[in-house]
Image (cartoon, rainbow, N blue to C red; front, side, top):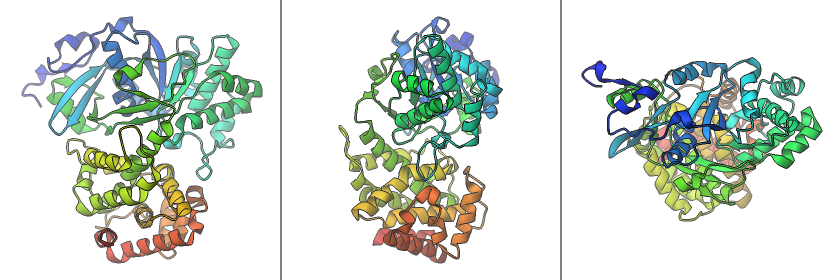
Length: 496
């Protein structure tokens, strides 16, 4: 914190030239920008990732007609919308590198739509011909997928509501279909729907949901969307912690009053298919990778990084460790991550250009250990029912099919089950941290007398629980954790 608060500069358009010289800021005329992208689910990750790529293009005089309009379908985001509106939708990005901290003000976002019942403002904005991309970060659990089949859940009450009242939808996907219908009727052409969530085949999933909902509303509309809109698969990667008092103070220590700053690691990756029906910014000029092998990059990231996060989050939560860097400083947890990743996950991950799975394990170990990143265990552990089913359980299925090692994978599921029982090793309570927390806690409590009860959650495990080898390894790990504790159980696995 500076000695005198009077020296602090509130972040606004008119104060950009007063910011400390070391802070990069937009060199383009933000008033001259015109919108080309609507982004739904405007959280920290988007502002540190897609918004940054677009901003850096604008710094070079490119993509000035691709400014971003933020949006949300959740009323609880209204406070964040107000905070960003007060500072002209500017964001301070603070890069946390062990060798030092640097900051940059990003200006590619020029508006944030009102959040309202029926999402009329969102539909009207997406229906405008200037919008050529609608992107989303709505979390892995936000796509109305059946947990067991991972297919579009057409019977979900919110989806059924949107089928009946597409003029006043509840969901982001209903709003998208409504806007596409308006564009079809006005002969305004389609837009690209671009998922930026950590889902296998995220574009394919988004296509199934949007086209599926369109078909339920009107088969002719569904066919038009399928034939004209595009849904590129992509993989995104950057560790972006949640913003709290520490991050707000960090911005002030740099001389800025930013009510919604974003911290991030010194690493970004964006891999995507070049399938944009209405054009796109030249993001490849900033290092984005365009390829038809997105699945291979996606498998490496989802299985090793996202899966690795889940492997360490449960034991860290059980031990009461606060951050991922704290977890990596705990030798048994660090060893667990490395052994499971190298011996049990990497055999089911293809190499990509310039990176083998073993090299990627080294990279994520370094990234997770960054002490400057205050990435909380609670944030990483959140929504494990979606994250385990997206990143860990598919590897277990492959290991069962191929007969490869899976003792550490079984241990990871036993640790998750024990975490969901809701009590740390020191007896303190683990607060609810999953949309399905009640269900998970019930299964974990039942597993105390019958470990197989955890695997009988078919909406997550499908038929995996029927495999004798995996069932035996899971029960062995779960009982050992309860009998001997976390460190001794992990230690035996590492020594085996």
